[in-house]
Amino acid sequence: KLSERLNTICESIPPGSRLADIGSDHALLPTRAVLDGRAVSAVAGEVNRGPYDAACRQVAEAGLKNKITVRLGDGLAAIEAGEADVVTIAGMGGALIVRILTEGKDKLEGVKRLILQPNVGEDLVRRWLLEEGWLLTGETILEEDGKIYEVLVGDRSESAEAENGRLYADTVVGQPPVELGREQLLELGPFLVREASSVFREKWTGEIAKHERVAGSMGRSDSADAREKKEALERHIQFLKEVLACLP
Ligand code: SAM
Image 1: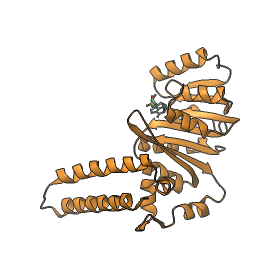
Image 2: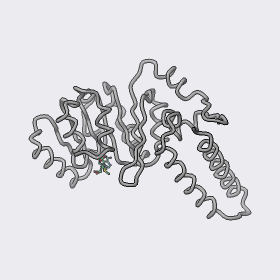
Image 3: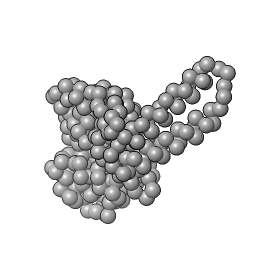
Image 4: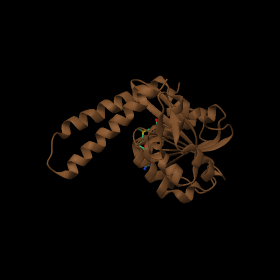
């Protein structure tokens, strides 16, 4: 049985897709996607030998060698342009996901959907999607084994620019109202903040506590630069608290 995290990703794969799962580890996701008919074929890409071997074993044991190809390669180097219409990249930091997408941009031709699950740095991934003309069409936040995960779905869209404009246009949430600009929506997630689930609140309560620890450890400083940094962090903490306090 798949974890809830991987299951959430799997459910965003449109039935009949040609899938590429980059950083596939044990190839659990492509195996499930093929068994469920969500993927008609899949490539499981891995940069490391150990996970690559594990993926090969998994695919052989599932009897899916005719449908899932396991390849050793860095990021999107594991696929050919036009080979996949859905790409999943999960369980890595947002900066690494962005590096993989940027370096492999030519391989994204023909890809209609990206399903991305950064462990940290979700804002970097949202920003990449926005700047590269992908439309964020869905966000899910979930908690599993004491960890909180976000799954982001980006679709290629003819009208991405206009639609992204609406998605990231100044938004007012909560009571009393708090205004959110583009930068803040990139951080919080435009769908997630509007949905304001209990997991979302829990995540940001934890983030506030982390920021407060950092601000506390910054101490007093004579340097203007350090003072400015601390003040910016304190303003950010204040903003996050206001958002949390106003949500229903
Ligand atoms: N995607 C699976 C999941 O979400 O459960 C596995 C996540 S695992 C924590 C991250 C995997 O990404 C590791 O198996 C690692 O070898 C692989 N990886 C890291 N950098 C990579 C890269 N540049 N290209 C391909 N795979 C990479």
